Amino acid sequence: MVDDLNPAPRLLMGPGPINADPRVLRAMSAQLLGQFDPQFRGYMREVSELYRGVFQTKNRRTLLVDGTARAAIEAALASLIEPGDRVLVPIFGRFGHLKAEIARRCGGEVVALEREWGSVFAEEELEKAVRQHKPRLVAVSHGDTSTTMAQPLTELATICRAHDALLYVDATATLGGVDLPVDSWNLDVVSAGLQKCLGGPSGSAPLTLNGRAEKRVLRRRHTEQGLRTKDDPQGDGPIIRSNYFDLAMIMDYWSERALNHHTEATSMLYAARECARILLQEGLAKSFARHALASKALTAGLSAMGLGLFGDQKYKMPNVTGVYVPEGVNADRVRRAMLEHFNIEIGTSFGPLHGRIWRIGTMGYNARQDAVLTTLAALEAVLSQEKHKVPRGAAVDAALSVYR
Ligand SMILES: Cc1ncc(COP(=O)(O)O)c(C=O)c1O
Image (cartoon, rainbow, N blue to C red):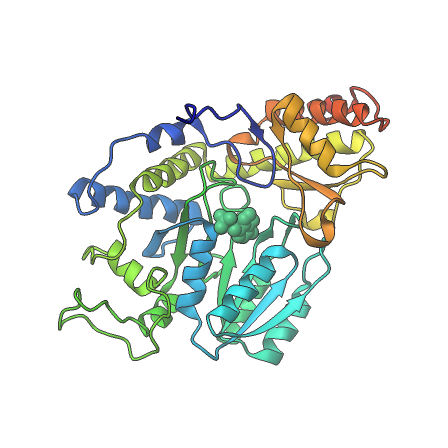
């Protein structure tokens, strides 16, 4: 027999997942309900309403896609991209490549616009690309966790409106920690995951879409045989190639009609509900300020240690920080020592940045003073053990003075 489950008490200070808020873990242990139980349907309605608050939207279609954040990305792209559609994907990190790859699998004709990692796109570059390529859809990350950069979106949304392109935004890494007012910024479809600033586990992906996007999806509504009645209007557009990620059917499932699709992931819905409740009880503005403060304290501490910050700091996400690995230091050995001696996880990085930067997350439940200070103290001790000279005590002092 294998042992009882007994995970180490890690402090997860990487780019996500982070430690779930204990309230979320408690909510997940609540008893299950059937998916058509009136009480459960009431919880689904509450979830939609709570996430309208989180997304700062009035969108009727605000729901959860069951799966990790990429499930919602895939649902959005599979449902919005018709084979042959031109899709513009501005890529400034790994998650831009992910959207380009999913868009291609959906049959989109992808125009990939690439930028050096550590920077973001200038508005004029995006405007020029939209004018030139006339995409039906633009798919972009808000924050790309791989590079810790956040792309400004307001102008892009205006450009998309002016050229009749839909704008899909992957806000997995920012929702709840960074301002993202979906309606006032005119974002058509936005999705996220729970495991970052929302302080939950991965496995449920909140998504919202406005009327413009809904229209495009409903053009492709093909209700499953066996459920369809003669009164169900069917779209004349091409069928959505994925059944599981068919947003037309998922919207019908979440609607008052409750047309059967998948079996809602009950415990994940409880988790998502509690994540949103915690965030809205704190208040969006306070949460954004808490994330900004944690970032300021962390970066002050890292700089006091003599470490260099990665990327254009003007566009740095406030919830994840990229920091250069000093010359002569083995990045993976430091991460291992942080884990073994302090039970603290910090992040490695992908592709061209692997071994060159660490990524430290200060988000959701972990965007807290004690978590920031403990991480800095541990990193300082480990770097010293690795024979890298650091001014002892300076990092914690610098971070503390930010908090004071
Ligand atoms: C910006 C962004 N998009 C998408 C994803 C994929 O999320 P998941 O691993 O939950 O599918 C991540 C995960 O880190 C992310 O940071």
